[in-house]
Image (cartoon, rainbow over all chains, first blue to last red):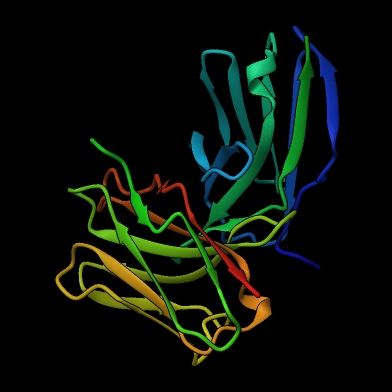
Length: 110
Length: 115
């Protein structure tokens, strides 16, 4: 079993839809959780960072962490064509090593 | 803040040749990381520096791979005797020390194609 599981999709939604992206993990030591956005042939761009359990909101983006279920989510409200990208979850515990999911490819259609 | 800078952005090399990538982190960041990403996969951790000290290395970092950060500023990643399986994007990232050190910022990556 991989430490971090993420459905690679692809996911296609109409403009304005609410998008839900999820990851599960197996390592209970993980306590720092991040979501990155990656455009084709570019480096990952940090979107959201959450420590431990709870919710965090930033504009149209909401990150949720449920440590009891080992489940994290990213919600995108009022999705735009410019949100079309690959979304990567990443997490770490006491080590400096970030463990990534495979990434979910999202397309928002105008 | 100019971000993490990587050079070259693209490199095509013949199998068996050596290649070197350079990374310039964000100026006030003490921590520097190297990751490798292949198509359809998330980045995989290779190694981590705090200042000039290499503190963590992945098993992915075979004997053909070596990374340095001689003065605690820029870093180089060298791959010797390249193989086709080394074809990937090599990502550098940096972060500051705590308490703000839990966010990691990536560069644009260096694409390697081994032919």
